[in-house]
Length: 310
Ligand SMILES: O=C(O)CCC(=O)C(=O)O
Image 1 (cartoon, protein in one colour):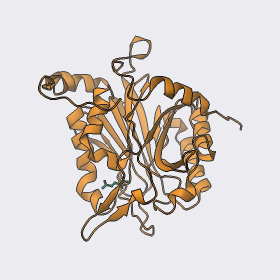
Image 2: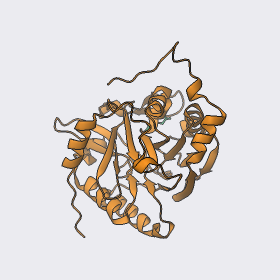
Image 3: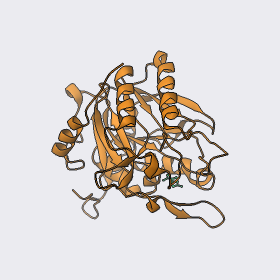
């Protein structure tokens, strides 16, 4: 089936709205009202060394999900390639490349929003990024986030990783609009910087999507805690989608894809195995909780303010 979609449309759209330069539209609604619930499905897939196989797995799982009729499906960080710094440049494709086309087609075929995890992206200068694309129900790209905080850590007796060996950091804060309200997206290590989630919430994000792959050192310690903390601070739904654990890979994913509600509670969480988390999110809860416990509106903005670069 042919469903070739040009990324040109997105470039025009994106230049016009200059991501994060769209301030003041945080209250925009579609047709005057937002839908008050959304069905999401988080796909925790096994990642193999074969890019095509990884894409086929997603396609199959989306087809298997048809009966559930999800509105939004999310995929894991670097779901189409091994999570290894030396492999990112090997697997990298430009925006509009083969993986992008396949994902855009899948979104269109299924009539869903697809937050297509993240993939290695190469730009015209040969720089490689960890990039998350989001497609709408027509398969058009409506958002693109390049991981802003590169994952360079060296935990004594634990995990070492240095993304900056081969990746370049992105420099834009990413939010996008849907009939369910505004959403924000960032990638894994980005969650550890509370300013970023707060800036997305300030811009009107009500759900924050995070493809992520914590590991066996930081996963048990910080994965759930980070999602709960950002959800509580910002009174938003937080959705984290991870690759399934593969003990044989050089980087072992913690898994545990998760949905946390705006009260800071874990609504649902997978274990480490392949799986799919289908959840209905009550979006009215965001407004109720913000009314009952008015954190965002009680900030002392006369004394302190957080501003992103425009
Ligand atoms: O922050 C962490 O512990 C894990 C981050 C990570 O794996 C990533 O950014 O890809």
